[in-house]
Length: 111
Image (cartoon, rainbow, N blue to C red):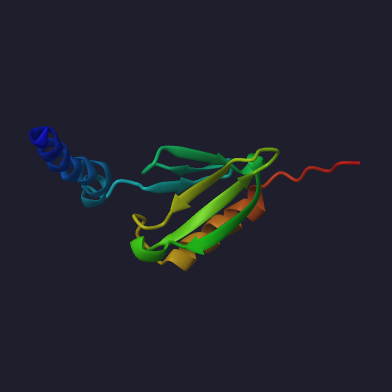
């Protein structure tokens, strides 16, 4: 039993290194914005502007970075991404995402 616990704790650092830090060292893209969507490659999340009602930001606390929350229209689920592993100023990243959202969002008119 102790061997399994030791094995699990030995494997976790390698998993996190491969998942988060190796792409960072290789300068892979962490996030990409276009006129249709935001792609967050770190957690394999895609947010389509047409589905977003509003966005909000909160400071991530101990882990650092800003957590950006996308409220999805007609859904109780939200999508949250963190700027922790994205190179750049957190406020600038949030402002750029907000610009894309404001420019490419789809406005629903209900009568």
